[in-house]
Image (tube, rainbow, N blue to C red; front, side, top):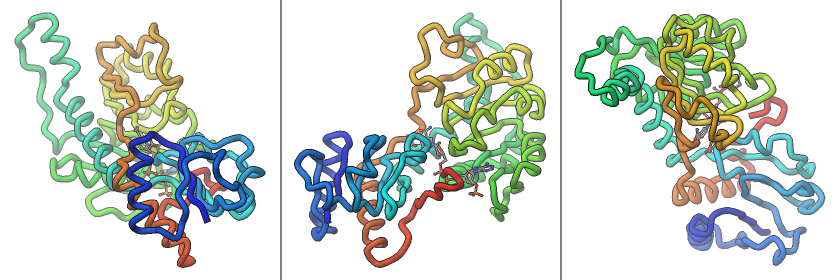
Amino acid sequence: MTFLIQSLPERVETFRRHFAADLPEVAFATDPDAVDPADVRYLMAWTFPEDLATRYPNLELVFSTGAGIDQVVKAPLPPKARLVRMVEAGITSLIREYAVMAVMALHRDLPGYIAQQRSGTWQALSFTYADERRIGVLGLGELGQAVLDALRPFGFPLSGWSRSPKDIPGVACHHGPEGLDAVLAASDILICLLPLTDETRGILNAALFAKLPRGAGLIHMGRGGHSDQEAILAALDEGQLGGVVIDVTEPEPLPADHPLWRHPRVILTPHVGARSRAESGAVATVANIRRHLAGEDPQGLVDPARGY
Ligand code: NDP
Ligand code: OXD
């Protein structure tokens, strides 16, 4: 029974340590050429080899090193194998910080003050109090809910959107295609934390922006494939969007001449919203294999029919 991992060397060493201490009955391997493929029951990687299903016929759990699994969700798996996304405290903590940073940057008009600093202008821009700045979150999963928890103490009116109904204290929750417009109409700042699926691809488009209050902010932390980047630029230029913080693009990296790099109302970061932490990722993975060995579902089990 072997766990095969393909990742960065320092991450692999942390995993090796945790497996040796807490899951010694599972052999730990890093070199695909040095294992008997028939022994591989567990595999972890960011992307999978094309011949995964035939090469490792006895796979039971296939782990993504990241929270998002759009890059692998359509990969053919052997019949018994199930896909697991990364749910661990390190990712959640970094995403929470990024969201608070981005909300505050838009709420306090950092793009406006940066432009004024560059032109040597000492002038107060308008103030909006937190209880008058409504925030909507698309995606109420592990990360969307963590972000709402982090924003709650500031007093922003909060709403959110998911596929299935939710009941989250202090958050106006809406769901399904018919629930989306209510969240958009109540989002002075909209945060995207959706998985990329056939249903959500291209969701951040001109029609959606038109349903936001005029001058709304957008924080995009999902995947590049959610957004129509030309529509973001057009909405910014005609004032429908007032400011954008964008962490994920298509392609990544953006071409050097892409206007998102230089737009004065855009803060662009290179897909650094979060990164899985080796220590807590290893603990979560060992716990998931233990759950599996005990006949339970692992945390972060992906439903291939839903695509997330
Ligand atoms: P989860 O699977 O826990 O949550 C996904 C949420 O999206 C759920 O609330 C789900 O609804 C909702 N959702 C999915 N499809 C739809 C739909 N068609 N309509 C409405 N709601 C929908 O994922 P996480 O919170 O762990 O992660 C979310 C995403 O964040 C990842 O897939 C990844 O793309 C992105 N991410 C980005 C990072 C970065 O560095 N920028 C880092 C990590 C993740 P329901 O609850 O009803 O199932
Ligand atoms: C992830 C990411 O999905 O880093 O974990 O985007």
